[in-house]
Length: 349
Image 1 (cartoon, rainbow, N blue to C red):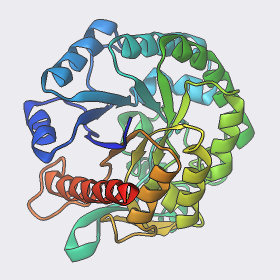
Image 2: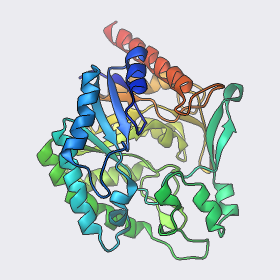
Image 3: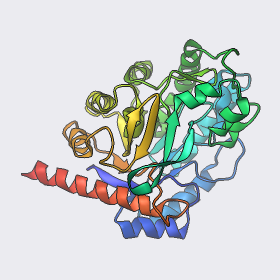
């Protein structure tokens, strides 16, 4: 399969989104945590109905990214009840695969993505997301403020572990044990069903937030997870180039991740975005304004055998934009389309 472009990162499958995908020239569609029935798992009939709508619009349903975090937060944290959650996650894998969706993305961040400023300014005054670790540290004992940095209801819930600077911690060693327990239980089911599980990097990529350690904040963590997978064909990456760019070292992480995982066929798809700066302080930006060269990244992907899809992700909010940032997404998708066509042309020369 050739590299291609999909539209995604929304919960509700509306006619407006389907028409936008067709009008912008995308061939496929991805959904992030789609709104489906079920408090603990998804059922085949519900996922299949979603897939049939996508296919009926003439699009390929490329992937579903993320189930509700409360479906498996006990597995991430090693809490009592994790085995039941894992059984339900296995059932969800079967439902997604049998509905004809080939990829299920997931993360291992039990206390979510953190953002300290949702209205920072980037080029021309467009609004963009920002993370500043100094703001987190200044509020280290203000749990209410820390919860405000998380976007999800579960992340902000009082039941979710979150500790002040002098509180207990969930260590990296504990989190690795939890990840190994989870992945060893779900990978065999994904293999049986012919589905790829695609791991998303930590965002922001720092070792710990709110007393909970993170695992996927540097290239080593992904390489270690790859080793833990034992060569399973079901293990892959949802490679967010923005998260890699956010890591200490910036652009170098983008290059390292592509050159290590793409030749192995371990990148299912790519979030194509970038930031200015890196941890401890970064701000999202338009493609081409950030740490890495987007043309170089596309060429690296192509030359290293990547054959998945590129996807719009977080985008700046332009003046007059919609809640879903149609204008910002149109810019990102058009930019990717131009880069991809140039890469195809240069490869043909």
